[in-house]
Each structure stands twice: as structure tokens, then as C-alpha cells.
Image (cartoon, rainbow over all chains, first blue to last red; front, side, top):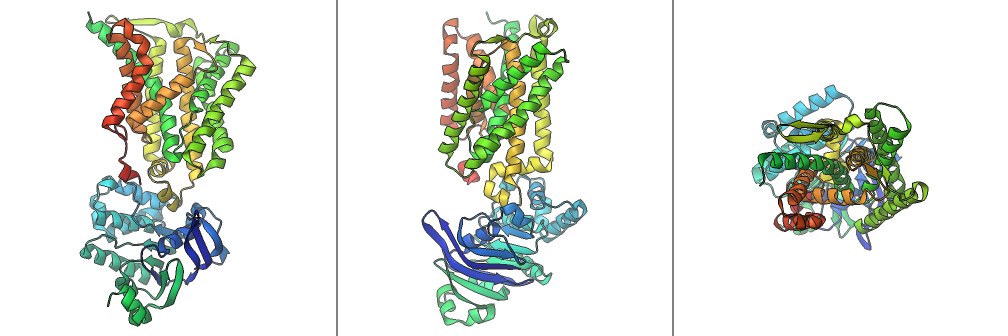
Length: 234
Length: 299
């Protein structure tokens, strides 16, 4: 589905990602774990076409997208739920969701997906006419995920969906991610809660200071002593 | 000394001036919201709209309303052209670079006009009927005043409906709030920016026509002060937010008229200084303007 080859992302002189290669196959749930500043967010931003790529290639469905603008990447079925949620606070919940479907022309399908998102997150239905800026952090996260789903993506990239949320809401959000995975949506998940991410994922990459340190099936990672020590604090 | 009639008269004048400021401020605020660009050339598009209106009024016999609508359309497209040629190549450049570029564009437009039509002010005379005075309960206003307010309100209502309800309108509000998130939604920013320049320049042309009609004159530098004051209005209301531009425009219109109308005549020369003092005062109390987003919200 998506392949990243030797990606280097640099902001000014600072390289946030250095020669990262990774791959997510159709229907897979892959997670990127690593500490702050390891380059996880920059990798996702590069795939979406909003990070300055210095070198390397990004290939989606066999077609190079490295230099394409973000709207062309969304058009290829990629949805990105960014770190920090970035919901549009001055827009209503429903307007935020409709923006997720910005490129879609099939209004019947959009309506159907809107109902589906409201079924997944009933809280959003209750608050659909409220400004997104007035929602709680957990509700904003639900909105951000719902908004990403509205494009009916084939590849869903989630950046720190559990950050700063109460355990109960984290549980709810991860059960939705699990459900999407079972429905066959390809998912690339960046998550600081490594234990949670590894339990859910098929495969994992460990990033350290902008480079891939380890890669392999998620179940093996959980048992890897290095990973346990550094990321699972055991 | 200030009779109710006098006060009513001042209010009418305030609404009148405020309507024009609001029309101009909307274009400035839309563009700033999307690109963080303070478009100094905005007032010059207003001036070009006024000149084109003058040309149509004096050289053709078309209905008056067309002499207004045609410049609006033409200047709308000119706005798109200016953005395409001058501002789009600078996408992602520092704000200062864009600011200087807009000053350059402004200077190029003004001086091209000086060279082609000279700096000599020209009379902008409308058919006599338009300036006819009506008196209701001792308060007088011209047909033009009524047209100014009616047209401004109608245009602003149309714009509000557009921005509230259409797909592009919602995308525009989203992009003004967070450009990067809007791009991640698949919104083509260049398209949204193009629409913003078209609509904003159109409103500026309408304001230019009305301004020229009110003061019965056009000249190549006529756009500078209205442009600057409309910028003040946009900042007072909360730059980047369209209702803020409207609110700021009317507030400034009223403040200016009241300052001149209710203070001793000796003060009226300080009219423009007062406008900027008001800006400083409001920004001291609300640094992001009256309806502006707080800085954290914008991050």
C-alpha cells in the first residue's frame, strides 16, 4: 500500500528523519514507536506531503508520490489524523466531519459514513452543532479520528491518538482502531503507549533519533529485551 | 445642542462610512487569514474599481447598476491575477517578504495609473437622481447613501451565506484557522486562496465605486487611506475572522464620524490620528481583536 525508501526530512539544517525505510501492506496494522523526537510524526507528515523531504522516495500503490501536494495524496486514499488533533475549533462538529469528506462527490456515501461515525462516537452526535473548540480533549480526539474516517480512507495514519486522554477513552478509541483493522482498513499508527500499540499491531518499527533501529512482528517486539527495557519500562 | 435629529444624522453617516470600511476589510481579513499576508495592494484594487466605474459611467449609457457590477467582476479577476503573479511564487516565504512584495505591487499599480491617466483627480459624477436628498423626520440622506448601505449589507449577507454553507466556504474558514490541518483534509489551498482573492477584490471594487461616488472624485492614490483604515478595522475586529472585519468596519466608521461630529471642530483635523489611537487602545485590552482567536487556538 505504502512504501517509504531512504526518507530524509530536514527542517532547515536539522534532520528529523534520516534514511528511514518502511512499508505497510494492504490491510496491515503497523505501528511506529520511539521516544519524542525520534522522527515518527515527521515520517507521517512526509507521507502526507506536508514535510520538507530532502531525499528518498514515497510510493503509494506502486506510484511515486514524493513530490505531490497533500490534496493529491488524500485523493489516493490516505487519511491523516495528526498529533494534537488539530480539529477546527471555530467550526461545528458536523462541519469538521464534512471537511474530512472534502474531496468526495458521493453525497449518499458521505451521509452513510457520517451516520457510521456518529454510531462509533455517540458523543459527537449529541454535540454535532457545537463548535469543536468547546469539546473536551477526549471528544476532540474522537472528532479527529471521525474526521479522518470521513474520507473513507484505504490508509489511515493515526498520530498519538491516546495522548493526554483518560484510560477509559483510550480504551474506547483503541477498540475503534481494532474494529477498523478488522474491517480491512490499512493503518499506520504512531503511539507513545508502546505496550498498547504492540498488542494491537501486526508489525512494528522502532525509531531512534530519526533512524529505524528495529523492525519486525509486533509480538516479537513485546518479548525483545531491548524494547522491553527502553519502551515498555519492564 | 445635540438634537435627536443631529444624532440620528451622525448615526446615518456612521453606518455609511462603516459599510465601506467593512466591505474593504473583508478582503484584507480573508487574505490575511489564509496567507498571513497584509495586502497593501488591496486599496489599489479599490482605486482601479473606481476608475473602471468612472469609465463606464462617463463613456457608456449602460444602466447604473452595470457600471458597478462590471468593475466588481473585472477587479475580482484582477485580484486572482495579482495573487497568481506576485504572491503565489512566495508561498511559504517569511511574512516580511510578502509584506514588502505587496507594497511593491501597490506602488506598481499606483504609478502605472499616474503614468497612464495622470495624478490629476477626476470628477466622478453620477446622474442627478442618485444624489437626490430625501428627508425623513428631519434626517436627510441621499439615494446614494441608501444604495451604499443596502448594497453593502446585501453583499456581506451573500458572502456570509457563501462562507457558512458552501463546501469551499467551509474549507476557507478551516484553512484560515489551521492551514496545515486543512491541507491534510485534502483541501487544495491554492484554489481556496484564489476564491478569497476573487471575492475580496470584488468587494473592494464595490467599495471603490461607492467611495468615488460619495466624494465625487477619483485619483490614483485614493485607495491608500481607505485600505489602511480597513486594515485597522480588520485588526480591531480580530484579523482572519470575517464577522470581525464587519464589526471592526462599522465600529471604526461610527467612531470616526462621532469623533468629528460630537467634539469641538478644532479636533476634527485629528480624525485619522484618532483612528490609530483607537486601534492601540483596543489592542492593549484585546491583543487579538474583539472576535479574534486567542494565540493558543491558532497554533
